[in-house]
Length: 394
Ligand SMILES: *Cc1c(COP(=O)(O)O)cnc(C)c1O
Image (cartoon, rainbow, N blue to C red; front, top):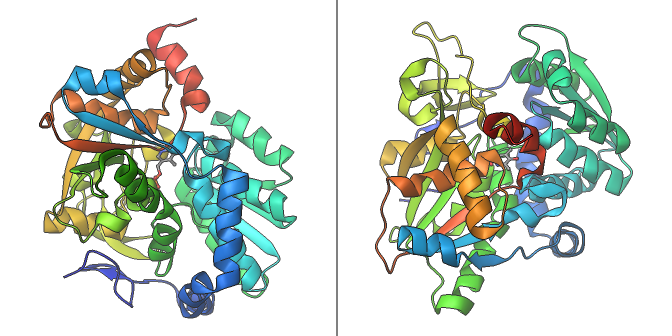
């Protein structure tokens, strides 16, 4: 039994491609070609070169000495916060822009909520000189002005989604509509391990560079490739998928997924999908999803925009359902405290998403000799205003 996707894009009972007829040609073209293209020598060379010279990989695997002492175990940080643009998301957008070029596409669309994926997409479109349209809910455009400005500086067009709640899901609907109308020249860059097959598997493969590096870096530092535990925060699940990827079927490596409990699992304001979700279909994928008894998607909440998603990707739904992964949810308050704690202990200001992963050490104990790798998915610059308001720093 494997925890990887099968040929049809299923992780156990989760995944697949539940899409309208009119989207079938787009997804099918991608499905038939993505693995072949990713295995081409010229593709691999260009991908590796850009990850090295443009993104700044390999990112360090850093032994956090003071953090380790505090929690009495050996903690390593995988420094995705040092990637160009400040988070892991660019690993995927670099991969997908190269994929789009190989497929002969000359126009990119994307959807974004907080704007992080929009910025990562606009970045690689500028890099390649390719037209870029980013759909974003009207409400989110107002809330996320700095990222809207970044996208515009990078040459992207930001199109407001004016329907429904005017947030991420409405932006997603607009992007899908655009893709249906432009099947030949346009590639849709999805930002996490979500959406119809082959997206979850394709995005996981692009992000798998994270665990590929962890293996040889840990071998150098500790004489073995496998840690005892890998910990990552989960929104849609792409940084986690990348950090787990090469350990998924190595069951002696513990996998820990950290979700956002917002104001508390039972508060009605959270994004703790594993605790609250039921099987459903979102964005073309069968997965765990927060929904009302009659199947309406519940509005998620988290202080961190990147974890504010009502589902998880199918890989993670399967890790939860099979018990392969241990799922922990962390409240806003505990995440904020952990972000401040890491800043003071290690001189690293983490993204609030990543801060959730560090909060687990308060309750989840590890053995003194355990080697625990935490994926530090992004840096906290983008969250400074939230930190300022929360801790009254100004
Ligand atoms: C977007 C984001 C996340 C959540 O997305 P995943 O697909 O779950 O990784 C986590 N951390 C940071 C820093 C992000 O920008």
